[in-house]
Image 1 (cartoon, rainbow, N blue to C red):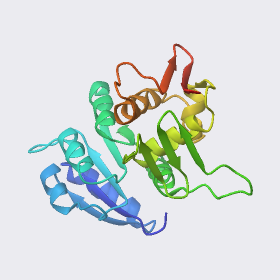
Image 2 (image 1 turned 90 degrees about the vertical axis):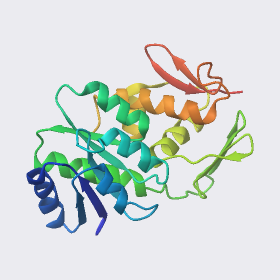
Image 3 (image 1 turned 180 degrees about the horizontal axis):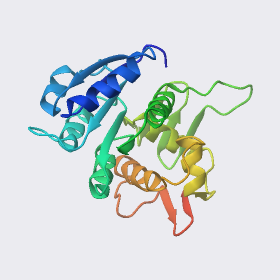
Image 4 (image 1 turned 135 degrees about the vertical axis):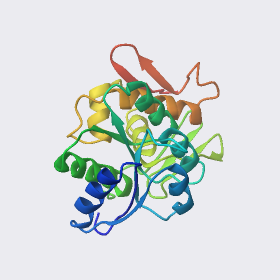
Length: 232
């Protein structure tokens, strides 16, 4: 995504500068912040195309920052984690993060994650002759052209990943899709082992779509295999 606007939030100045330099030389517009409070002062609904956010910071950590960002924006978030912060990484996904990088990381890994997240955020499937563009099932309506989802008549705001995951499931009603299949259809072919992404995002969709997320009627689990959207 040329000239994308990126906010880098990390209390370690050398790391902020490393990310900023490598993104700017490739045409990204980069701003930085040293903690969550500084970041929130810069963030509006459409100020940035991507936020790169460290989890461990003083004053306001990345988890609280991600929660507050999601209250007013669906901007993609890549979180930065250290080895051993697995639980915090999963909590970050629950709060709305889109991807993660484990420190230390190299330039190519950073750029690959940035490109993948921005591609998902801006991707639009071109219409093909005769192709179904709207799906209605179980009280859920999904319109690809309008990028709109309603549940029992009420509009529901989804992040780009949530929208595409729901789209893939709804266009294959009753068909069990494996964790790996969903991961590569939604996140991309370069994603192979991050199957926890699928589990976390299914949980997020259930909270937004189901009458009772603990007793799902729409997004059904096939234990040990994957997920399917109801045929009913």
